[in-house]
Length: 347
Ligand code: TXA
Ligand code: MG
Image 1 (cartoon, rainbow, N blue to C red):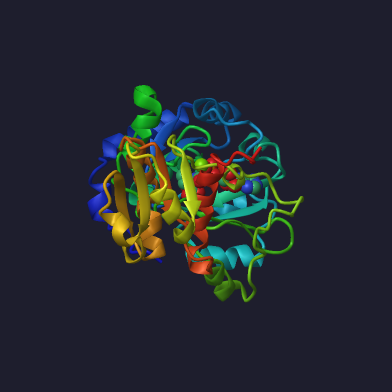
Image 2: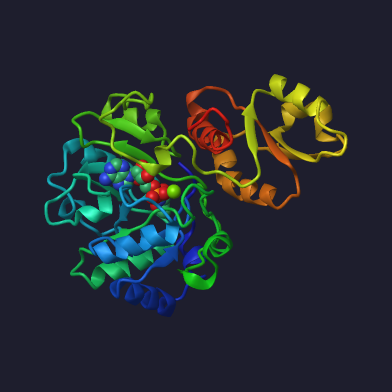
């Protein structure tokens, strides 16, 4: 697990007045972007179908895709679900607050809009102090039961934001943003589906399948693309998280001949671990970025890097494919989806 942000540092960047004002906006059905330890979220009242519709409209996202409901640290998950299975309680005890979302059967009184019409609901309690302050203030306006629906605060399909500036780059001044500094984890929460009688990983993240197995005593089912009963999830679309500049993800021995064969006047970006990059780190026309050797650090910097490379005046982004091991599963997942947006054979 990452070091959690020190509450004093991060919360001090957003004052109590600003939190109260943002909670009032949510209460009035408006949207507020806020920091979490994973990525910034675009929040609205989870029990207001109108607020949820505003989220979809702002993102340009199809209304059939579910959004995650964020709960305050003292929030009651059982308010949102038909029943809370013992596996869910064990994962909550182990990983909340933190970067883990649970998919459970939705309680009948929760509007279906928040789950894109499905009979489930996604719940998460973030650890970021600004998120917690906002969720606590909003929840207090709802007899302690308020929840904030929040997808990542980016336009549909684009790279998720990990700073307040990234959110402004996506939406301009149209959305009110709370600035809680850069997100620590850097990629979206791990999603575990517990709505179908067995634990299944829907989206890899900082909490690994092994972390889940250590608590539940069994490995979650891993996504293999063939599970037709799996819930719909936009972060699980094949092409997602994409920058605007064409991106290719290939093993280094495939990238090298591509680098050698590029046009003399072409400027390309190369992202690779310094230990592999060799002479290409210094080559003319190659904008080299030394990637972290550690998967958690790689994840933390990934989206900021993709955004920076969009501004780096390069024609292509070439990224070294990382080892096919469980520790790289989350980074490989996000890079694979970013690259899939540019693969001609994809539909
Ligand atoms: O880290 C995160 O989870 C961030 C921050 C803001 O908390 N949020 C996030 O939300 O990544 P979003 O909307 O970009 O991803 C939501 C994903 C959906 O694409 C889907 O995979 C899953 O959460 N999800 C939410 N509710 C679900 C449900 N009822 N059934 C199945 N999947 C659900
Ligand atoms: Mg997203």
